[in-house]
Every structure is written in structure tokens, then in C-alpha cells.
Amino acid sequence: MANQNQQINPPNLEKWEPKTELGKKVKNGEITSLDYILENGFTILESEIVDSLLPNLSVDLLEVGQSKGKFGGGKGSIWRQTQKKTAEGNRITFSSFVVIGNRDGYVGVGYGSAKETVPAREKAIRNAKLNVIKIRRACGSWACNCKTPHSLPFKVHGKSGSVQMILMPAPRGTGLTVEKKCRRILALAGIQDAYSHTFGTTATKLNLFRACFAALQELTKVKVQPSFVGEAGVVEGSVSR
Ligand SMILES: [Zn+2]
Image 1 (cartoon, helix red, strand yellow):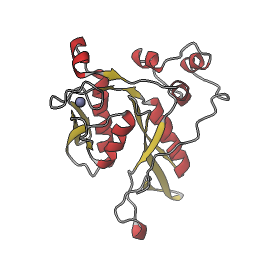
Image 2 (tube, protein in one colour):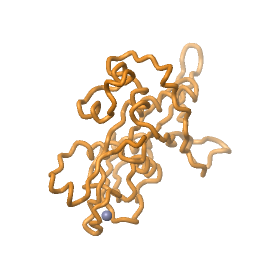
Image 3 (spheres, protein in one colour):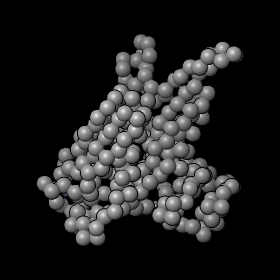
Image 4 (cartoon, protein in one colour):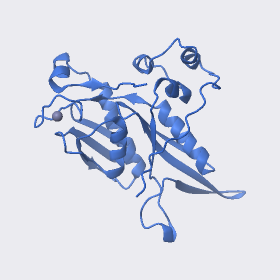
């Protein structure tokens, strides 16, 4: 299957006219670090903030829909279509689910719906940027203990709806033994090796992806002992320009 990884045209930041205080500070160079924004818990309302401070972002559209009819074959579509009966007739809505990341510790996921596919995708990309997090990576595998950040520092747990996902450190070379599409979330986050367990109705892809992201969020939240940082080789996301 073709790789869904896409380089979406980067927005023209020269033309960007920030509407929020935070946006203005980023545009005029007062704020130059995404970490500063994330660590202070500022809410990002303009995706250009992330475009400005986090270059080299990749975008991946995950399949959330069902391909119907003769072209389908259970492959799954990146568009999810829903129909609603209204007074004017049937109204179709397209939704898409996007993961963005720099493959080096920063990752975000977003969902977007619209009457047409392109705006739905744009909304999803925007939402993914607004949701960006910085994760910790390490070698938390006792069987490996190489102290390089190819995996997770510790076991994490995420939940969405009925779906629960546990992600665990794995030795170097294991790869991502995770549901296929969640693999793409971990890859864009910069994780190379991980084990996982999934519980619940995993046919509900949206919940599966959200549970995966919720588990990654735990990597930022859990407090880490300074001694463990050296022991497992814990690193945080890094921005390369
Ligand atoms: Zn290792």
C-alpha cells in the first residue's frame, strides 16, 4: 500500500497575521521555543505557532473510514463518511484523522470534519498541530539496557472509549509490535521499538488512535527520577532546524 506520508505545502508564515497574544509573540520573535509554550501550559490556538517553532513536520493521514463497494476490499479509507438526513436532503460529512510529528519526540493527532474532503483534512492537520506534545524516549528495556532513546522509558497506559492500550519498552531491533496504524503514530513520534497490548473494541479506529496518543501523553506527564534519566538514557523531544 502506498505510503500515506505527505509533505503538505507549508503555510506561508510571512503572510501570517497572528490573532492571539501568543501568536504575536512568536511572530515577532519574543518566543522562540515551543518547549516554553508547552511547559507553561499555554493554549495554542493558531497552528502557525507550531509551524514557526517546529520545522520538519511530517503529516500522515490514518485510515478511519471504510472503503465501500467494489473498490473497497476492507482496506480502509482515509475519509470517514457520515450521512445525515436534513430538510434539504442527505448531507454528507467527511472526516479525517491526522498525525503530525518530527520523528524526534514531538507528536500530535487531530480529527477534522467538513462537507468536503480537503477542508476536512486541513482541519484535522490544524487540530493535530494545536494538540502537539513533547514525549520522552529512552531505553526502558531491562533486556536491552543500551541507554539510547530508541524506545520508551517505562510502560504507559492510554484509554479512549472502550479501547485501552498499553505501550511497553522493547529491546533494540524489536520494531513496533503495535497495531499497524498506531505504528505510524509512534514512528512520527520517533519511537523505534515498543511492545503493546490492546483491549476493547479495536474495530473503532478512532478510539484506538486516541488511546495510543493518550498513552504517549503519559510519557510527558509521569515524573522521572533524575537517577533514572541517566540509567535509561531518557531524552526529550528535540527541534532541528
Ligand atoms: Zn536499548
